[in-house]
Image 1: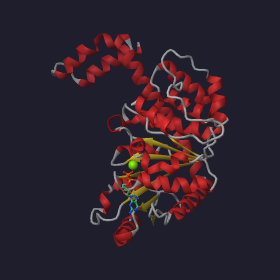
Image 2: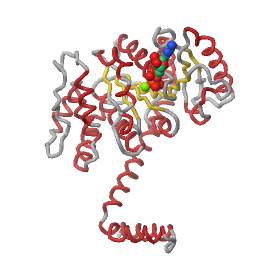
Image 3: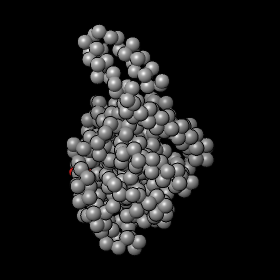
Image 4: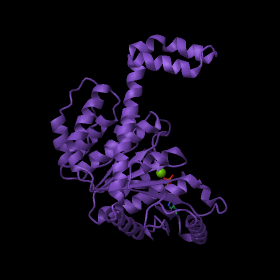
Length: 358
Ligand SMILES: Nc1nc2c(ncn2[C@@H]2O[C@H](COP(=O)(O)OP(=O)(O)O)[C@@H](O)[C@H]2O)c(=O)[nH]1
Ligand SMILES: [Mg+2]
C-alpha cells in the first residue's frame, strides 16, 4: 500500500510555488529509525508547505508508539491554528458519483479562492487500493489544482483507527491553511457514523433510479444527512433524477430535522456538466453560517472533541492492555478456557482486568 501511495503522489505534479517539482520517491515518510524533527514539521505545516504536510500526515498515520507520541505533540502544537475550516463529509454507495462530484465541487470551490483538502475514510482501502486512489482519474483537474490537496485513506486497521487518523490529518490540513476539508467515505454502513463524528455536515449522494427502496439508502444513514444530493441529473437520467429527488423529499419530510432551523434539502446535480454544483456549495455555506451563528456548530464540535478524547482513551487502554505482561501471561490459556466453556466470559474478563490494573 505504501508503494502505491508513493507512486500516486509522485504521479501528481505539484504546481505550488513552495514545492518545486514532484515529491521525490524517497520522500521522508517517518521511516523506522529516522528521527523526526517536530519543530521543522510544525513550522512546515503552519507555513502551508505541502510536502511537509504530507510527511506530517504520514506521521499521524503511523501506529508505532514513538510516532504516536510525536504525532500527539505535533497535533497539540498546531491545534491553536485549527477550527476555522468548513468540514464536510460526503458519502454514498459505490458508483453514485462521489469522485466525480468531489472533482466538480472541489474545483468550483478552489476556483473561488478557497484551499481545499480531500481526505477519505475507507477501512477497506488495504484491499481495494483506496477509494480516492482508485478514482484518481475522476479527480484529475482537482489533483492538479494549486489550491487542492488530495490524500487517500490511511490503509489497514479497523474503522475506528482509520477515522482517528483521518481526523488528525484533517486538523493538520486546517493548520496548513486549508479552509475547506472534505472527507469522503465509501458508504454502506458504519463508516458514515464514524465520519459524521469528524465533520460539520454530511452530504449524502443518491443516484436516480432505485425508486421504491429510496435508492437503497438505509434510514439510519438518511438521518445523518444534512443535505441529500441526487447525482446524474442529466441526459436520459434527468427525469429519473427528478423522481428520485421527489421521493427523497417526501421521505425526509417525515424525519425530524437534524439541526434546529435547518431542513434537510434535496438538491440535484450533474457533475460532468457542473449543473447545480454552485447551488450545493452556496447551500452548504449558508447552512454552515446558520449553524455557527446559532451556536449549534460550536456545541457540535465540543461534543466531537470530548468524544474524540474518550476514543483515544479507549484505544490507548486497549493497546496497553494487550501489551501488559501480566495479561499476556494468562491470556492464551484463558481464551482457550472460554472457548471450551470451562470459564465464563465475564469471569475471564474480570481476571484479565484485575491482572491489568494491579
Ligand atoms: N451522467 C452522469 N454520470 C455521472 C455523474 N456523476 C458520476 N457519473 C458517472 O458515474 C460513474 C461512477 O462515478 P464515480 O464518481 O466513480 O462514483 P463513486 O464510486 O461514487 O466515486 C462514472 O462512470 C461517472 O462518470 C453525473 O452527474 N452525470
Ligand atoms: Mg469514487
